[in-house]
Structure formats: C-alpha cells, structure tokens
Length: 357
Image 1 (cartoon, one colour):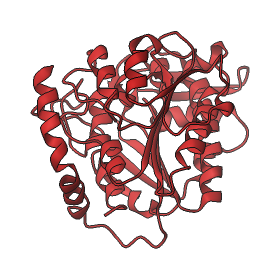
Image 2 (cartoon, rainbow, N blue to C red):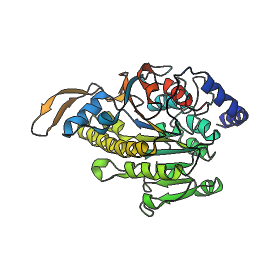
Image 3 (cartoon, rainbow, N blue to C red):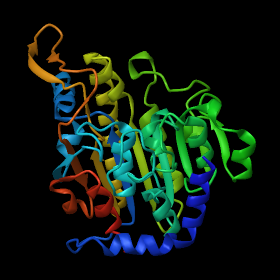
Image 4 (tube, rainbow, N blue to C red):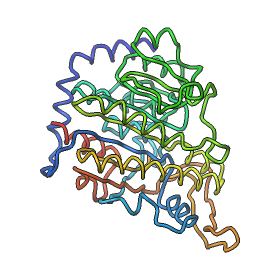
C-alpha cells in the first residue's frame, strides 16, 4: 500500500497542529487533578453480561466493580454497520472518528489518521501496547498502523517500525523482522528466555513465545497479562513527561465467538486481576487515569439462571458474532469524571485528548 505510506508520510508535518486542533475541539469540564499518564484497558468483546458471568464465579466483588469511580456507556456502531468489528471499534477509540469495518487506523474514506499513541508520542509521552493476542491483531494494530484491512498483517507489522510505540508486549513473533526492529532502535525479547520482570529498556518489543498468539488462560498462560502490564508500566514510567498505555484482554472475545462460557469467564477474571494490579499502581502514583472499556460485545450473552453444581451463572448465546449492545466504560483516577454518561465510542478519544491540551 505505497499510496497509504506516501499520504501518511506527508501528514507527519502537520502532526503537532492536528494534536492541538483535536484538543481544542473538545469542550471539557475543568480537571481538578493533574493527569500525567493514561492507561486504556480494553476487554475485547466484554459487555455487562460477560462481567456478570465472571462475577457469578467468585464470592468477592470483581475489582472492576469495586474500584471504578465513574461509569459510562459506549455506543459501538461503525460508520458502515450497526455491528462493528474490532478494527473499526478500536480505530474509533484510537483516532476519534467512526470508520468502516476491518479498517485499521484510517478514516471512513480510507485516509490515515493519527492515533492516540502517535499524537501523545509527539507531545513527549512514552507509548505502549500490551495484548494477550498477536500484536498485529485488530485492537493493538489500531493504535499504530494505518491500513484499509485488518487482514493485511505484514503491512500492519511494517507500520510498527515507524517507532511511535515505545513498548509492545504480545504475540506475532514471526511477523516482525529482527533487523528492522534493530534499525528502528528496539530491543527484542522472548518472555520464556527473558522474564518480564527482568526487562529494563525504554524501547522494546517482547513476545510471549514464538507462536502467533499467547495461550488461553485455561491452557496455562498464567499471569502473563498482569506481568506484561506491570513490565510496560515500569519501563514507560521512566519518562518524566508521562505515558499512554493500551492493555487488551484479547481472548474474552474469542470465547464469545466460540460460545464457550468457561473460556469467557476465565479470560474475564484474568483481565479483572490485571485491572486490580494496574489500578493499585495508578492509585499510588496519583497522576494516572485508568479507563476500562470494550470495543464491542461478542456473542449476545444472556444469563438465564445459576447452576449450584458448577457454582456459576448459566449462560445462553444469541450469536457467534458481535452485537450492537452498548458496552460499559469504567474510569478511575484524575479526569475520570469525563467518562460518565452515554456517548459514541469515538468520544473516548476526544475525552482523553482534552486532558493534554
């Protein structure tokens, strides 16, 4: 897609101007506390039913419920379909505009648009991505790549070398070229050889292993998402100007597509555990806003009762695809009051950018 590359290259010269314009376009309430860092946590495919299903499995209140200070609802339709896909859903969050299904970091007319990661990087902040899937998958890709289709994995990986992401942890080892990563200034790690807690680098990419995607939590992935999030935070926080980090609980969506109730519950509980750790760090920091939401709901999950033998809710599915059900937005920390109410998903971008005029 040379044409896209040329267009995007030309746009780099006006990046600062667009960043200021995006911030000025939002009429936001005064922020009573300073926001230095933003952590956007996306539970792919996670609606209220998924959260409720996970809650039915444990006796204590979920961390997302007990820690949230503000609650909103996000409307998820794409520009060309009532039912969004993850590409359009994540891109709306990352560029502030509705776009067509399968789009990655481009507007509805297919022209590239700067992402939150790129805009905040230019403002001097470090940027990061953590996912329990491949790093070229739709949601993480939407924060650094600019392609008309999420299926263009090689082109998406090639966009990564532009360097707007400082820290990336996930899958897709085989799609990233070691020489290009080195030329772009990245250290490269494989987590089985270098434990996440041992990584000390302000610009790196780390892979769960050499497979395309990390394992399911049920199959022994362990606290990878939590540990990867802490690793990213530790290294991004070395920047005195702050950071932006997107963390995705990726496989909740996959369980929904398979209509696998236990898969959904286990992945949601893993995501909730990660939320607890991230929010604990953010509260101690005092200048970090944590936003927890989803790109869409998957499976049309309904909870029709409670099974005393399995000690969890009884789930029923209406589809193996996404639905148009609004998804919750939870916020914790300074600036969180902006995220109450009901609004279109692309407004989350503008709310975040209004924090950094």
